[in-house]
Image (cartoon, rainbow, N blue to C red; front, side, top):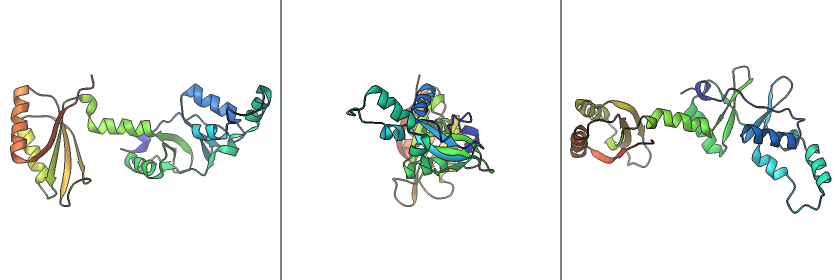
Length: 221
């Protein structure tokens, strides 16, 4: 999954001289939580988040009157409160790399640059969630099967041959080496829905032959 295929391309931006009040209004109007800050040539200078705006806003306990407050807010510029030189990602990078950076750095969005260092998009948690939902096939419903398998060549093929032997249609396969003993892996297989009796036979054989950790019917409708 390449970022270019999943990023939001129509990015709303502001220049560094934009007032904080205008930037806050823009985020509210567009329903977004962050704004890339660019110069007149479109070069990325920083990122402004709704948290930056909140932290820079006067306390509710302020003694300023309304006119003084509006004057103060209009004088605070984006360049004064943005995060300069933000972490970025390339449009040719993978979504998994993007998710790892966001997780490790505890940030919820990354500006996307092309090979000319031009801002071409943005990746947020929403886009990452979209990819996760797509590769798991959850919107297609069916059954998700969890197994703990020995991490040796051929162990997964044996399971897949068993599933195909019951004429089940596989919609996704994922593996993980987390939360298992060394030498094992977790495998998550999603199959399309089938006749109840066929599903029962498949579940019975998988239970008898392998370490079946769960069998769950997903239905979001």
